[in-house]
Image 1 (cartoon, rainbow, N blue to C red):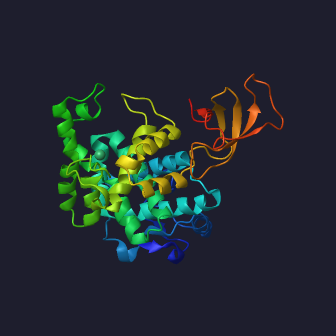
Image 2: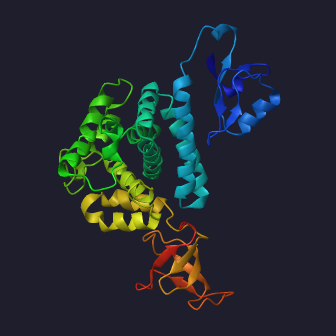
Image 3: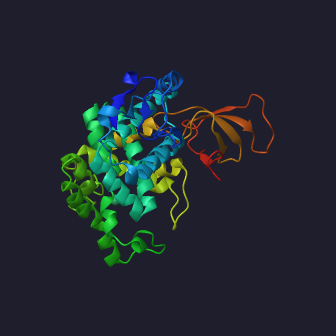
Length: 356
Ligand SMILES: [Fe+2]
């Protein structure tokens, strides 16, 4: 089996391994012979390369089976996360999504990454899903900072494996419903240095990616762990991953807590802004994510219902809303426009799209 560029594939070539779409569905099964139509379809879908079996490569076997399921799950979670986060600036969003997808695919070409990811997945499914989410969110921020491919790869690899040290913490502590005892908390904190040690043993994991595992719980104001570093002494990758990590933790459902709307996560991050997170990175992050995308239905604090018609880049939790039902429940045809920036006492009480 060997990998070739799709443009070099020709009718009659035998597909060497299953080819999956971004949401984990099989596009073509291993063993199928390519036709012109298949090749054309794959080109339309933006597939760049394909594994084929032929005479020259018949002795080459690419070890894939054990890790394949993990890869499918990464793609599935990645698609779900991208669906969920709704990037702002809709015209750029599609390009960003495609770029993030490409970078993720490239990260997954690294055998060391996939092996470690499969370990995370077999130990704790939540940590695995969380890791993929944090990777997508970190790449969103990296892209908006204008990172080149190399830096996106280092950042993404670190984000994907940031919690690998949790493999050493018993699952009953990770999933515990009640608050942790001081001893348990101390143990959980060791996942940073344990993760760093594990990753350093992998020669194909960049040093700065391993560092993300060590430093993703450091805080800008010096209150984090394990070293209590502060400000720019914490590498930017770790400062990015710390924001993505907290954002995803708040917006995910856990055994001990309900999932919150992204707006709650934003409120939390902003309230911690000057203390725990890098202010500039945080505002870039909040600019990239549409908390209330245009068209979402929201309930305001006075009881009226409205549609978001314009986002507010400086304050994503205070968009401009057109009222569609007033506070008494009367349907409005051309309702009043409320700019929440100009009405400080009013706020969005519920996001009607996201509350389930
Ligand atoms: Fe962590």
